[in-house]
Image 1 (cartoon, one colour):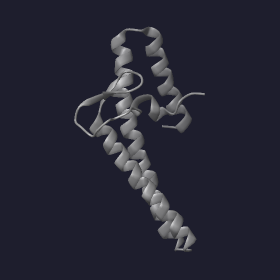
Image 2 (cartoon, rainbow, N blue to C red):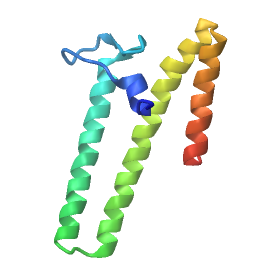
Image 3 (spheres, helix red, strand yellow):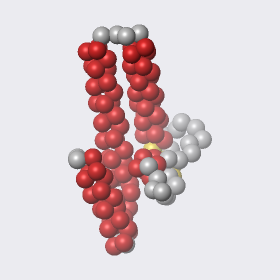
Image 4 (cartoon, one colour):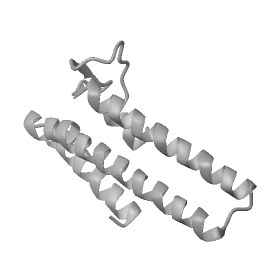
Length: 120
């Protein structure tokens, strides 16, 4: 089974929150601040989802619930954009710099599959 898209670029162990780069499992560097910002954004989204659940449980007005779900979708799109930007800056750029035709083809195929799957 293939790993989730985000884990390819952002998964790493960060001992402390510093400005020093860390290395992902694929060997690419990324700023610890980038991961901290992404985690904070995801925590806010998680809170929004819990809020929508409460709204449904409380039988709140449908339009209010839909407004919140739209906000969640918008926030997730921003997370996706950040992860894609990081993927391009690290994983794809590394494949291009490496000169490894197989790796370049694999990274390009991943992007084509991603965009075709989600209609982006």
